[in-house]
Image 1 (cartoon, rainbow, N blue to C red):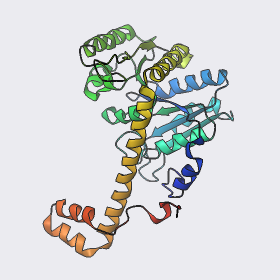
Image 2: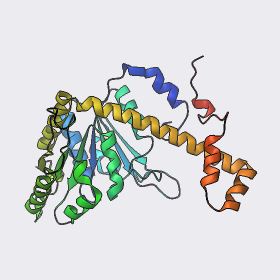
Image 3: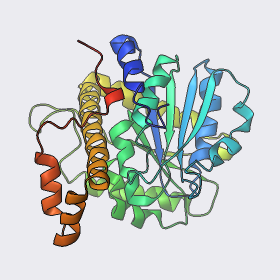
Image 4: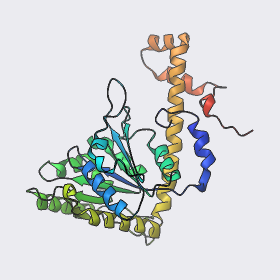
Amino acid sequence: MVEQRDPSVRHLLESLGGTVRPARVVGLTGAPGTGKSTLADSLVALLRSRDQAVAVIAVDPNSPFTGGAILGDRIRMQRHALDPKVYIRSMGARGHMGGLSVATREAIRLMGAFGFDWVLLETVGVGQSELEVAAIADTTLVVLTPGQGDGVQMIKAGIMEIADVFVVNKADLPGAQKTVQEVRSMLSMAALLPPRSAGKAGDGAKTWRPPIVTAIALKGEGTREVMDAVEKHQQFQKSSGEAGQRAEARLKDEAADLVGEWARAEARRLLDTEPALSSRLLRDRVPYAAAEEILTRQGRELVPEAARSRDP
């Protein structure tokens, strides 16, 4: 229902209200081929050994014909398929440029309602569009591998700014230590910039410096150290007040995204059903006047009928 953007999801989520204990969300991002899925699989095994329930939401590329996800991550995680406390869902990105499906936030909220302790959120792996994961996850892991030019890509994509933990995966390959040194050097340069903090500069704000963890996810090596870094980061967020700030920012982003989604759907409806508006657009050959008319029309409800509040 969430993936299909069923309007009745609103009433389901509102009925849950604030009673749901939110799941802890870890985002995994990085270039294709860095081993994000293998690392996620290894993290699931570790968390299950601690009797934690885990959901994995893997946002895959779409099939151009069906719109469905490729399901590659479910193929890689077969060993968890029959575990009732592991849920793995491949969601199609559906053309969304953030690397994440528009339904991701709602799906994460439902995972908390279903009793999952953790949600591992793995993104498509397409460079700059990966940055949106940091706005959704409590902790963002940037996964790198040696020998793939990741240092340059990090600078281009701005990944230095979103990483809470760096994971140099496939650390048994040649060049692993070089990659660690590159990341450490960039972190040293970043230290000269205004730090990421839980408050304004000068008011005693605490800062978080992303650690660098090496791992060989295929062998399960380094997974415990990765999870230790995740838990330390989340403890830092609580003690510094950043957790509350991130939660507030996420809700604001979600509300703004809903406004954009509903407004876009209404705009398309008007352009497809009102010949005068469409004719004006074709006559002007530029979209500004048509867009302004759509936004300034009075008496129009952007909220779909089925999704409107049931309150009197």
